[in-house]
Image 1 (cartoon, helix red, strand yellow):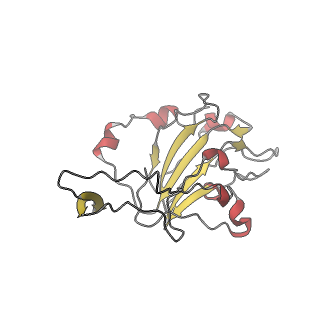
Image 2 (cartoon, rainbow, N blue to C red):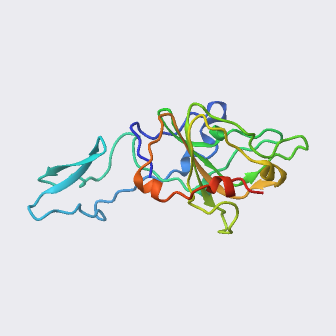
Image 3 (spheres, helix red, strand yellow):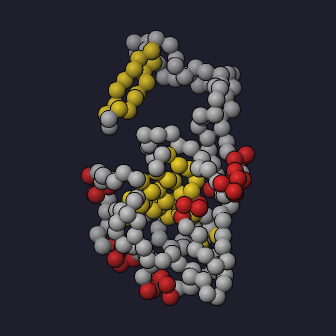
Length: 218
């Protein structure tokens, strides 16, 4: 789950238009039917409670009526769903297409990127792995989502890695030597302009030295 201060929107695509890497027509929005609506739970005192997050804390607002009893809405700000299989990534014969090209959503200066399985560069003089680099502007979160057919390829699905802004990272010699023809898995990437702060729960789940032992292994 990603929680942002600004609304999550679709990034501008420039000359590509709004058909890549997915057609906006594939977005699912709720179709509300008054006959099928499930009423919000009422508490013992006959009130409906709405929880609001503010400054990292929860507050409660109580209504004497069901605040979710609606038949629809107007405007374009609405919940929606996008399927991974509807993403058609951009490819290049000679160039390693930068991650921002695969941006799925944008929230202010924060980017949510989905890299889908795709053919890698086919030219003989092309580099098939992202070059060693550092990004001084963003903290980077990467989560592998697994292959479309469920095969175990690459890192375990759901294994989150975090690269703080300014830290050098990229493939080592073993990864560069392991030439492959395509990216076989889905990868979820979040770039945050503000530095991330790690919770105790995150620290408790850390695997010591995992990146040194396993990341980008051939």
